[in-house]
Image 1 (cartoon, rainbow, N blue to C red):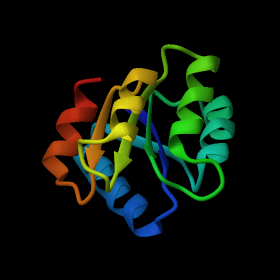
Image 2 (tube, rainbow, N blue to C red):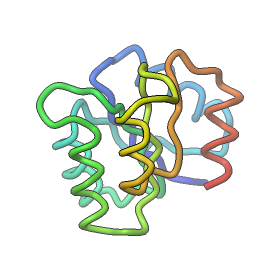
Image 3 (tube, helix red, strand yellow):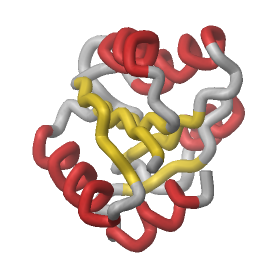
Image 4 (cartoon, rainbow, N blue to C red):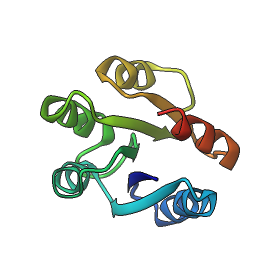
Amino acid sequence: MKRVLLVDDSISVARQLEKILVESGDFEVVGQGKNGLDAIKLFQTLHPDIICMDMNMPGMDGITALRTLMSLDKTVKVVMITSLGGVGDKFSEAIKLGAMNVISKPFEAENVLKILRSL
């Protein structure tokens, strides 16, 4: 079972993701954060297999957090979540920085599971 850390400032998105992951039986949600700083702190204490992180959050955004996470551990598997879609500078920057994939909001359970199971 893969251990997943969810980081999103939207409680409803985090709950939706958690439900999808837990009901699949393939994933355990080991923690939740609301911004990039939470992602870094929780990564260092929980050591998840995968981090699902929103790209746009108050305080430290997901791109900044991704940069820091990659400097701490180049093997960390991060999937970015965004309402920006699969185009634009932030999408490209996330992939260049090391994100494994980007999931667009609103998302479908099958798509989320397919991406995370491939990691």
